[in-house]
Amino acid sequence: MSDEPLEFCPFCGSKFVSPSLTGIRHFVCCEKCDARGPETRLSMEESVRLWNERAKPKWKKYARPMWR
Image (cartoon, rainbow, N blue to C red; front, top):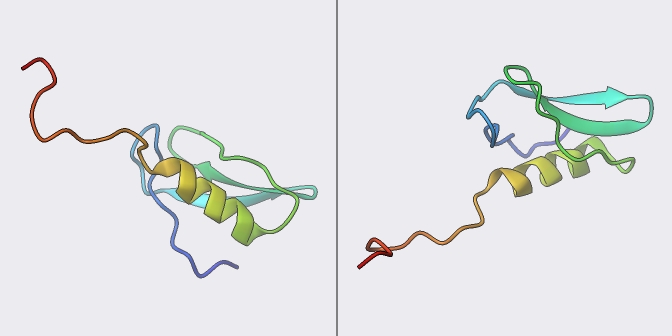
């Protein structure tokens, strides 16, 4: 099992997310909205890393509104 903590769900904001396994595919699933992270065959650690990577916002935070 991975030592890296799971980030919140990027869709509903829930902290109720858990790693899952279907056959040979590992993924992370939100228990509140049923969102699923990317599937990987490598390891549970890799699926947690992918989930945490996509849970981080990619947009830039502006110091002032853009309409000024």
